[in-house]
Image 1 (cartoon, rainbow, N blue to C red):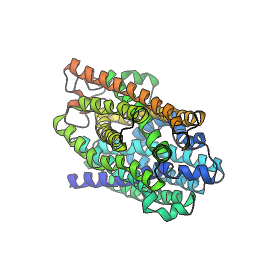
Image 2: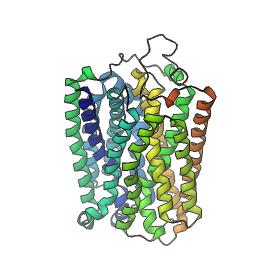
Image 3: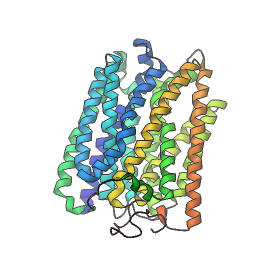
Length: 434
């Protein structure tokens, strides 16, 4: 019964996030129509995804703390409802300010939803198969991203009608996530005795952030930098880039962009299984982080085939999410997982917002367009530089693992046993003591 229930909860969690991933990635396919039909600049398009992250710069950590207090299941239902409201306002979308408000509200709900679902998975898979569970969760989420890119072909008649119908499709899919979130809440409440019991959340103090281990901070910065590179490019500017620089049609550009997500759907569980069975998480993260700067340097400085860069980015995107979140859960006490995830997403939201704004500003400043494809080079070099810093963070984590000679994030479980309050391990993380 316990085994069946935890896999049911994973399926519900994955279905809940899938619609939200579709909606987040729904901007890139209509970016060209925003420019032609509504006269948006690159900066305005970038702001639509930047504003998604802005509220979470301040509120992601609060959301994580709230999840620890009210429970993941209740937080999932509330956040999914907020996402649906934001997606509907985005689809209404006229004037531009209303669309911005919609994306802001959607972002506010989506980050809390994302954190709560990861916390929920860590609770249900606390005694094994954590990396595989998270990998399968992300694989289903990637179906949402893949579908958003392929929607330019699958739902071509919607795009032919203008910018708005594709956004209404996204709003509908996000609203379905409220239904699966409600089912998750009801099943969790009925079967809460089967999942991990966590200690009651204590009053949060900023001084507690000093209790996280150095390895946690290495992982945090790798996560932040990876997201700040991958999502602004693939979810905001890549389809327009493929059209302007590679001469693709909208449908072909959407298909090319979808290959990264398609590869991740199948490859992510494989890497999650590897991490569960053999460990080597730090080595996997180091390898995946090395592929990102190489990818953007190839795009900016060479005429390498698009399939090469798609392969590199697809591999990196398959490894890092599957490994990094279960590894993070191993480095903190179980009752502080929500807080740790919230802290990561708070800083990540700042990085995503700044990266989207900077990329849009660079494209406008250098006149990036079909007639001047070289204008995109500055954006690509910026992403290459950020991903190189991310690789350095992965190298520091890998070196720390070798230096300590400890099990740490190489252990074959998603979360350490809950320590007793006041123990030496309680405030220091579990890399050295796992």
